[in-house]
Length: 360
Ligand code: SAH
Ligand code: SF4
Image (cartoon, rainbow, N blue to C red; front, side):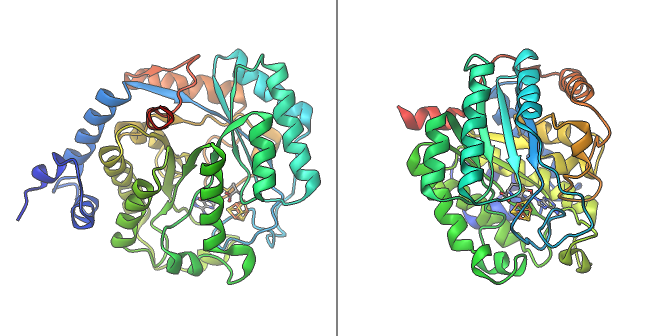
C-alpha cells in the first residue's frame, strides 16, 4: 500500500488518493497534509494574501435553498437593499485602502430591473474608482443575456458555488422544483466560462448526507471544469432553516478540520488557482480564516457591508464580526495576515495564475 507521504508527492491523484488525504486525522497525516499544501502555495502563488472587499448588496432572494438563512420563506428576517450610494461608498473605501478587488454579493433576483441595476452599479463603481478595482459578482443564476451585460459593463469575475458536485446530494439540500435545478447551476457555470469570466465555484463541507467520496468528487469536478477560483467552507446550520432539523451531522470541529483538509488537497491538486479562506471557517474558530491560509488558501474577503445591514445578511448562524464596521474589519484582518507572516497583496489585482496561463 502507498505511504501517505508518497501520495502527497504525486502530481496526479486518483479518487482513492484524494479520499485517503481527506480522511487523515490529527494523529495520522492531517498536519503533514496542511504543511505540504502550504509549501505548494508559497512556492507557486507566493507567501501573500489577496484581499477582496465583500459588499452584501441585498438579502432579497427568490430561492429557498434548505440550508440558507436568507431563503425566501424565512419571514423572521428584515429584508434590505443597499442604495447605490451606499455601495459606491464602500467600493471607494476598498479602493482608497488599496484593495484591488471587490465582490458584490446578493440573494438571487431575476428581473430586467435587477439586471439593469447591477449593470449600472458596475459602471458607476468603475467611474468612481478610476477603473482600478476588479469587480467580482456573486449574484446567483441568471440568463446568458444578463451575464453578458454584466461582463460587458466590466465585471470580469464571477462566483457561483456548485454547492456539491453530486446531483443526488444537491436534491437533498434544495427543494425539488425547477427553481433549484442542479443542471441549471452547472449550465450557468459553463455560460460564465464561455463568456470569458474568471470563474469561481465552491462547495459546502460537512453537509447532512455528504460522504467523503462526494467531497473527493468535488475536487475532481473543480479539476475537470478547469476552475480558476474556489471558495469553499464548512456547512454551518442556521436555526431558521429546514436543514437545521437534521442533527445527524459531523461535529462542528470535524467539519472545520475537514474543510481545512479540502483546501489543502485542492491546493496540491490545483496549485495555480486562487482559493478563498471562507468566512464560515471563522463561524467555528476565531482564527479560522488564518488557518485557511495556512492550509493553502491565498484570498480573504474582508466584509465591507455597512454595519447596519450586516446583521440581516446571515446565511448561517454565528457569522463573525457582525457588529464591526468596514474600518475595523479591514484593520483586524490585515493585522492578522501580517502577524501570520504573509504579505497583504495591496494594489495587486491577483488574477488567478491558472486563468492567466489559459489566456495565453
Ligand atoms: N445567492 C447567491 C450568492 C449568495 S449565497 C448564490 O446562492 O450563489 C453564497 C453562498 O453561501 C452559497 O453559495 C452557499 O454555499 C453559502 N451558504 C449559504 N448557506 C450556508 C450555510 N448554512 N452554511 C455555509 N454556507 C452557506
Ligand atoms: Fe438565496 Fe443564495 Fe441563499 Fe440560495 S444560497 S437561498 S440562492 S442567497
